[in-house]
Image (tube, rainbow, N blue to C red; front, top):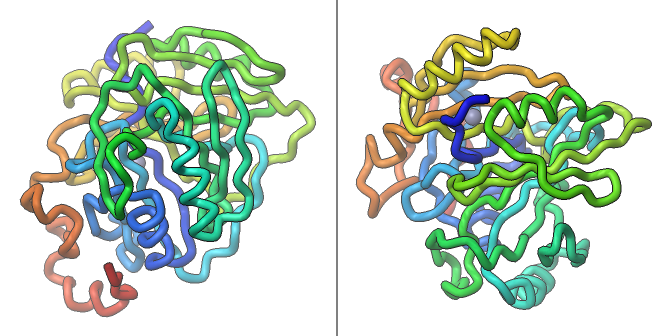
Length: 310
Ligand code: ZN
């Protein structure tokens, strides 16, 4: 078992429309856009990051908006629900707010002893707000969301799998401990993690495989403190037989990726250097930031992107 992984770092999904995506995360959910850049592998589309004030690992939801993307089809082998943490009694506020803002598929229940409010994002993304009274993290208060109701970051994520045997083993190897099960869902928790510390495995043996598209999660990233810890994790995964990519520089963190047995793409990302490496905290997410290799093409790249208003 390895001990370097602290919980989630970020989750990256696909979207269709950049402006609609931006409005949802900033105006509706009240998160802060902490970076506006491009997909480093496909610079004709944005890479938008939303989180707390500084994009603390464990709070960061990111998107690749492909303007003409068809909507994904939910299924197995993917992250089915992205869970954000809020304080006790915050769900009444959110139920009113989201209904007032036109969300029509709100559903509330209690799962693993926690109140949960489920809803869909603009591309059918599966989200939930989860009451986590134990969460000591701060919260960004954007768009009129009061501090006592604001999102603290991720609580965790739920993976939908046809079979979870090998993924259970992997999570335990990654330092997660098996907690309770409810029906066909088993919860794993990273003790003393960064707050974004739960992974739920939902087993659907007859489920058909997800088709990725707008509203689908592309990958889910776990946090390690630094590059030394990442190198240790990479070696441990390789020694266990996983096919892991080389280390890739993502400007705001360093990344390695590997495909898990259940089909979900995992990333291990460093907490360093962070989103303030190329702009002041006061102005995070405002200007279009490009990796150095694309700077010579800035005008051409910017001209192809739909300007984001707000
Ligand atoms: Zn990533």
